[in-house]
View (cartoon, rainbow, N blue to C red):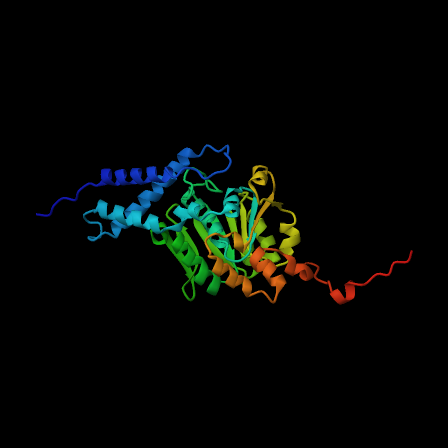
Length: 348
């Protein structure tokens, strides 16, 4: 006689409640309190997230879930959370990165040298919107509080940036397979859209696409990994109007000199905690970090990278310190040092 299936709903609820309590015990990493009462939304989002993961790992249990092995699934879930970097970002914070995460301006920029975790930072902010809470600070609301929504994530190209950088980093950040219910792919198997269990989607776009592709959508949040061409930026703004979508930029200033005059110079530069306290009303806020501020690279690694630009101080300014100095000649596009710099003779 076949044994009846055991009802494990109470066991599942116990696991979910236990894990949610441990998430909340991490506390808030918020530097200033926000007048948002979203506690119920956050709790429900965490509950839905953990329930989704538990159901996913139950389906991966030894007997395919016909006889639910809650303990085995719980162990798989805990292991996945331990491996997922998004739950441990606080351990990788340094001062400038912490400041960037605490900015809630309509446009916020993380500018700096190479290897300061810029890309991971904007991906984390967007994924938090899709999950409904910030895994590294579960009592804080994400930048966008909405049951469903659309995020747009843009970068240089599909073949290298998307396939070799973006998707691998997403898989390191959160339990990708457990959270994603669908992926749209283009020819060659390159991912162009992912759908979360929550109903949120992330549309992945490339700067190589025609500009009119940036005109045909409305977003809840947008992220640019490396500075976009100006025509793509302008087209993107149209899709951010309806939902007052926040815009995130993470880049090293080695291209697109237009960003200096139109964004960087206009931004409130928030590089210390005192400025952070007064940053709320600025339409654009920017944090700039150097390679040497990242404590998770060894001194030897930093010195090796810096030595590669000993022959080119301008390149070093951008790649090590996140400065625009090397773009001076291109910010003023017709500037020619031979034509426009002269020794002046003063006649008194």
